[in-house]
Length: 93
Image 1 (cartoon, rainbow, N blue to C red):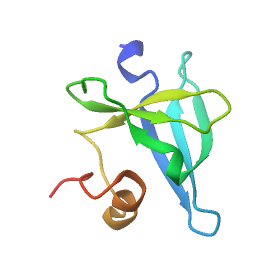
Image 2 (image 1 turned 90 degrees about the vertical axis):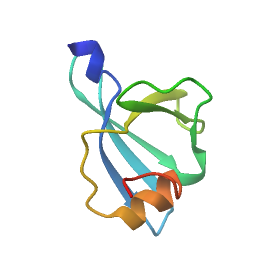
Image 3 (image 1 turned 60 degrees about the vertical axis):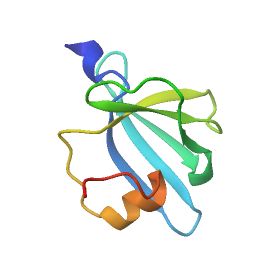
């Protein structure tokens, strides 16, 4: 079960002043890991998406990460900001 949630994004914080995104995800040992990156460095990978997530590539972090962005079983508090950060196609219609 641990590998299912490994690198799964749990919370997203957007700072409009600096145009940066703080992504919180589950690390290898189950601990919360925070990565602060510029919004423009977030892109979707060309990898085949999983059944419940889409692979997300962070190009300008200290070490390049590929994280899992949920496609199912999530709740958006602010749909407009989620689409600003991840693109217009993200979020349920």
